Image (cartoon, rainbow, N blue to C red; front, side, top):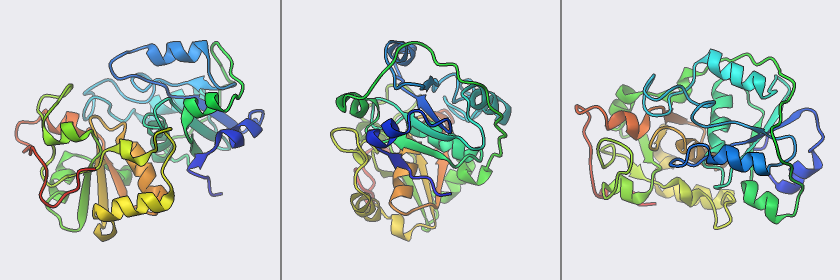
Length: 288
């Protein structure tokens, strides 16, 4: 069964009582721990469970590559089971920022072998703007059995990225803000700059002003201009492997499935002094 990458608020509203649909609230704020859960408890889409990027969708920082390592199969299975995600569940993930964090759950579920997952296009703001129902408090669904089947081919480590950045058949996309790519600002990680050879492609340019994913043809034009048509492998990275998933989703929506996530991303690369860093704009790259 093919699952749409995006669903609309109207589609979800029609399926609110479908027992095979599980809604996951991924509101999260990098510099404000706990704010997402607080907002969820005040109001969320009916039947939605809350999942936290830091504690539910990542191993502890640097217990693996970078600040948000992929959780172990056992840890992720426990989270998914607690969230009521079983083999027949269609998961709908949303956040408040155009899917930037909800895409982490989308990617992780697929990495662990669960294909039936979509993003709510426009997320929480679109749901509220449509005047659709909300509820407060915690949702505790009946637990389900989740059997993880990791797919290592979806991931790249630092050594793989180091080789691929020298390979003309590969495309490395840095999805962070342009000022971080250029090395003008680095609020979180040990060094400023980017992986040499990477092309700047901020994930924020995947959505419109309302946080809805851009049309397929617009995304195709964008990534073709960055070199995607000529790449056998496309590696996406961000600060710690979270928002890069949003670009992987956008690429798939536009027709490219030859993607890999650099798990540790810049938080991993920049910690290793033996890894080179570049600043400014690559002469052959885009600037998003």
